[in-house]
Length: 476
Ligand SMILES: Cc1ncc(COP(=O)(O)O)c(C=O)c1O
Image (cartoon, rainbow, N blue to C red; front, side):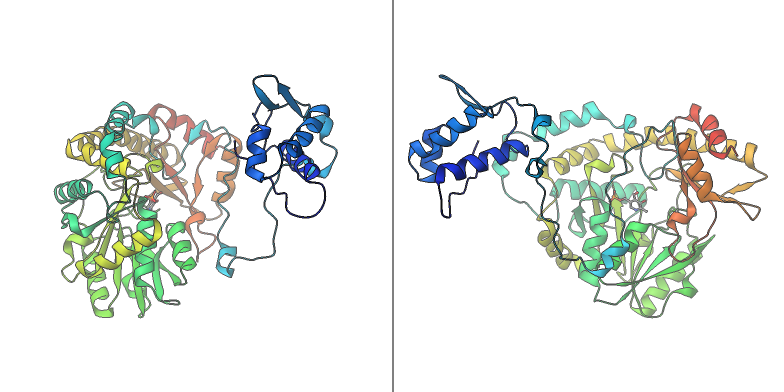
């Protein structure tokens, strides 16, 4: 391995080399068993005599930090680090603490350092599909197929808008499954929906401009737009969707989840869709339609997306493969009116050049071959059973304490207490100590703290575990 050793400065060079190697061994950068470069190579690298390096090595050998094996080389010895742990230099190195502060806005964004995962016996957490439904073998074959010489020959950054076959496949699929009106050129492939939101914010928002988001709503969207310098305003949602009459008149961007409101689960009515489009057109606003999980439909046919009702080019449609496939693939897309295409493609290029090529190409084959539709149909049957079971158990056993909000799609349902005095956050916290994960509705309320209710996902729990999970969740 190449070791960075600095011999600049006054004093004995052998001593400097000795100290730096010793530090690297003690703080773990050089690990037991690791082979050092030969004295000849290190001397050449540092432009010093071989003897200078040899003196440092011999001292480290003599003190037991290195093993010199004749004919094989010099290795870091298997020393007992506990013996050495007394002095401060032996702690693992980390970057200096520093005095530089992030912008004020980042104080309000929680650090995403994951809490240590606790054992979860009954998982009602929101937002994740069941990984056991992921078509692993087929995906492995598709990826292996793409990871060949063609991939190496392509070799460069690629089109920032994304793999052309995938964009064709998405346009075709959405045209049939969701009546979205789009050609491949209208699409930008992104790292999940979240990057699509980021690109849209970058190309549309001047500092201080208003973004209206649903209240309750999806926290990462609110936090993202705030971090981009926008003024984010929560607008209440009723049983028809976002309350258009409460939109601030100067709103530039309106973020909505019309097919399956996050987190309440309601569907925006057709009247409200029309009212929202008219409002946007009158006020020169743009609508961001997040269609994050409507592929899983359990009841009647879905209403047409806002995008397909939009005649004025005011809607940007965002989709993701996080729910249908896996969040870890980081694959999503946006469909924008032609007037925004060029800026969005440029924003994508300036942000990360392009999305991973192999994943995109594999997904293109998966969609094109009809596998994606089949996979979604199969998964929908599994989730429909869980959805029906969860609603049935909740209504049967807790119907006198709470209402289950109707939700005809997606991977979660919301419940709200009927009587005052419930403490949903307390219920969720107690449940967690019993190995049950569920989110209090309050977590999704930025401007209405104290809202009671729970959001229950069913991507992570088998139908046969739902009854026991619900019992444990609501045990007093
Ligand atoms: C409302 C909403 N939008 C979008 C997403 C998907 O985000 P991404 O595609 O970045 O994984 C989620 C994921 O939980 C979500 O809940």
